[in-house]
Image 1 (cartoon, one colour):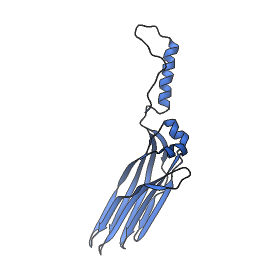
Image 2: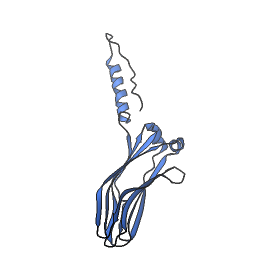
Image 3: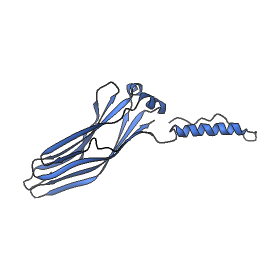
Length: 193
């Protein structure tokens, strides 16, 4: 985080001018308005359904969504070294099993690229929910998932700007009834120092 520097220093007992105080207030105002006093600069909030998935029995659904470019100018103006991605979504995974061996799952992953490059996984597929059915079971998992991922910006990212792509995958396998789904509620992308 950048340090707060004020233009004028004052010594007890010395006369000060209102213009000097006003200059210091302007320094503080600039510091706050540039986000230096915060815990991060919010680069994007995404509430769309671009990577929502839903899979009924014997189906797999995989979707992706590319977030907006975080430009080199934005990264450097904030003097960012990290990007924090917070993914909040509804996870629903249930199976109805009468013969056993049925499974359902929901997964998420994140990819990154600098502007002009190809995407690569920075967080490989990770399970948000996994259920397994026996011969007489009904298994159910439903909750709000909250993933927080921190990515360290490289010098190439800082020079070119950076993109992130979000994925979800839902599967309900091996027959029987059931459904697995991921529904995005909110993604917050923050630049951090």
